[in-house]
Length: 489
Ligand code: GLN
Image (cartoon, rainbow, N blue to C red; front, side, top):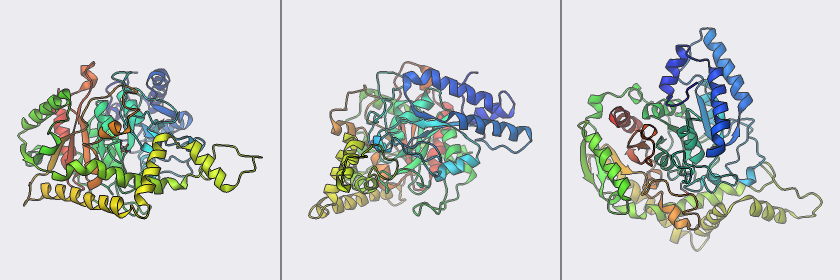
């Protein structure tokens, strides 16, 4: 069975037409994983048995004449920091190597109701800290476009699985770019929703004021479909918000899309972009202009502080969130029987042996910026800078300021880099998120869209462009994106 070029939309049509049964197609995906994933390394664990029994159930429902939604039977890959009851959730860390989730994340509960099939859990940078998936404690994931290159990160496994056609779509998480940057590197679509649009309940927390779960798909339309399904208020996440997304999210009207004005922030294009990236983005702008969408230059003057601001706030939250992993709760991984150790020794050994170097670096950084004497100089100051960054966006979106509806930016300064190229230099690695971090600091929805249909072109390394929207205006960026998909090469 040909699994290539299937989208959620076309999958649904074929399924309803009875071109295949869900059991058949699930088996095909599982055997394709076994064959292809040896090279790619996208998955950390498979959910074979449960996938097959879920699949049988969907087929029975169809035979009974039950009404089947658009996601029925759709085979998905899930990032390993999202909990699925009864299955491992390691966040690619040794400290959680033996942890089995004891409840479903809210997004998983919702997707179970929609009848999706979970194929397995995907590789990532440990606790989502990184931009290449090389920080996983377990394996390195390869970019399906070039096996010597990284897929990006931290949701590298999820994105590589979709790009390699061993999942139809996936979920990732994005704290500073972890959905959008790998999507850009692998020619996929990745959406980071507005902060509060999707429940974070059951997502292993990294930076709680920044984290959002979002879809990774082949088309913008698929991203809209998945997003609609997972979003909504949840009593288990007090930061989630009740927002009614209209039908327009899935069926945008061209006359409304044409009325949107797109801002080009000067600060994002003033040097530092690789030539092939800037050429590709120019092409994307040209294509959008052919839709008769109006463009305007805008300013986001505090952009230059975003990276430093993020690397104070995020580690502060990391140091507090990761305090819970003492190696005693959540699946002990080391055995200290008969060693006569006291509690403090056990903590030292568990955390010292359980966390990788990047995680330790961030816990140390975060503890430092929160410590008395440094709190005001670093943490409190970064919070003020965060506000200024947010106000830049408010002004750009205000009718009295920039007056734009959407902002177009690069996703990252380069295309996918070589495995090992940046592992010795954390600062270099951090710089690959320079264009994605501001949307997290400001809580805005942002999507990464491949400039071309790279799956069809073959050889070329993918480049994505980013659309950033007003809070809860996912419909704007998804709408423009859906029309872009229709006319791109
Ligand atoms: N690459 C960024 C970091 O290392 C973002 C990670 C993320 O979004 N989870 O923090």
